[in-house]
Image (cartoon, rainbow, N blue to C red; front, side):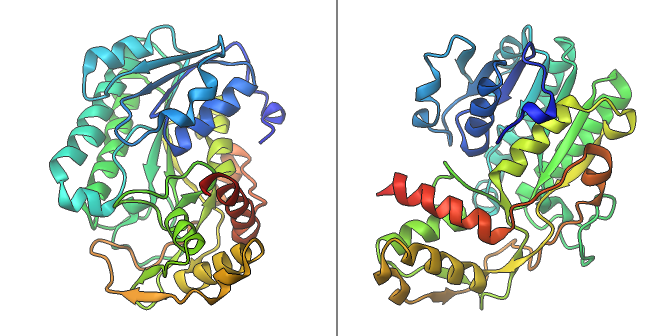
Length: 332
């Protein structure tokens, strides 16, 4: 992504928590390309060293191996920082159902440590990764920022609590905050491994190995899949905006269209077959619906367009073609 058009000041020192993860490492790359000074804080619980190994020789890049559950490490990372892009979290609805205590420790207590540290270090603004899971059991479509339901998982609760804490810190301490509710982000560097791997990289790797992907349910569940470049764009827009009405609030980060899982797998098979035509014949299986899953997800992005100038151009097909090409070249 070319961020020069967004006029991000290269003199800024920006802290990216979870900077070795999927989204965080992409953020580190694009910020360094803009000549910003970048500090990455990561404990490598889910982040990968190979995501940032090529950045270690950059004089503008500092890696702090630390855990947001430790206040002193958060305070150390925030020293001299202008902006915080807080991506560190334990994602995954199933993970939070299996282990709600650790998800809460990282996503709530760790988040609070970062807010306190950012406040005390007098950072200019604190942007954080929120989640579309916050909409919970709300039946309204598309999802509008001010209308949410009850959470359907411990993970969703933790991400909603983040928004409540950010709001209180803005009102009580004057810390500028912006929350970005990510909708099913996908793209380069997303990890296909592990029990809690996201659906797109997991399915891609299975298909590349001629293994049948298993769709939870009948495949009618739908998602608003969002290409990684738009997440990067929104993080940067959250820094550069000077509109008073654009801060101390939350935004949907999505494309604004939904794709069901059956169509998703069909597209993946089509694009991967361009590299290996045997993939077209791999059968697709169906399993039970997953506990805590929201049936349908579709975002309204009108608020982000109006207040931050957000204007995504990559639809699901264009984004998937780029992602599949990256995976083909990097997972073999």
